[in-house]
Length: 461
Ligand SMILES: [Zn+2]
Image (cartoon, rainbow, N blue to C red; front, side):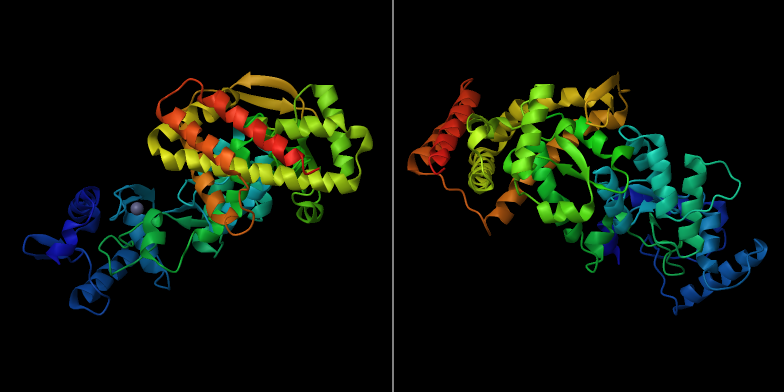
């Protein structure tokens, strides 16, 4: 017993002391063994039975009817802070139903193109959505998703969240879950020792893997593509896309940029059949947008191929578009492979080279919130308030972008492989060397290498 306790987080030990000595728990049985409190008492043990009797009296005192679920209700009611500390990691979470289910996380991702954690408070998610999506869109989403009936209560964030929380806690609703599950009389305070944050680790049955593969591909492409990523995500979360899914006219999986001007609504069934196919009519739409907006549609590493397409635009057929599509895909795979090599050769300097050269310049876009016309042109740009959340944004972006490189490598190894020849592999070697020496030429070397690769691929056309 004592041995187990030593691995418990110090915050949890402190929390136990506070709860045990709090007047709300006066008379609730707990034993000691060699100076340590015995927090856990099985239902059928003598202490467990005494705890149940204590709780029933408490329920009568509180005028709660004795029926299934009453223990949880009592223990929630008397909890002095409504926040429980996790025994495993030491973080606090609410004992109320404020955290999104896997399904809700997916639904938000589908509509707003942003993935939140199942341990982020719904109120924080709401505020974050408002930084890029219109208020009415956010309200409509939650009211429809949870099938809320607010009666004559005003439609506000507070009332919507309160209503959802109640539905999930009392009426079997599934969109939100608690920070800690009820577990009385086994645990003195009536809640599982580990919180929602450490549930996946403790409870082997719940794996997050499905969720990961759901978003990781799109992410790999988003972060390493050119374009105004923040504006693109805001535009995709706007009411322009209500009831539809967003389509990159030029697929980002082929190297096109992630930018609002090249995104259009599309019925979801169309999008899934299109995937990363390049259609002749799309090429002409892209050429048209490029002419109007002067925004280059292709990321830097595929720029030569796009210029080549442009040179031959009068002789394009669906057949040679398919050839272009193949080499764009190969080029993209080669590019992702080189990013991975850069990280593999020198974890620290490789990472800081990639972050400073490609990700840091993107942060400028996150300083603003945007409004758009229906073609994704930015009509208004307002400075965003520097909240604590926005200062974490860069760290988060870097983490996801780096992880995306590894994820892509694992997956891509199963289908399309890089096709670098010996001299290109040697150039990768020299590039990694330059990065390790902090050479100022590293970026130019990388650009030159990508340029050479594209020209070799273009010979296949
Ligand atoms: Zn935890």
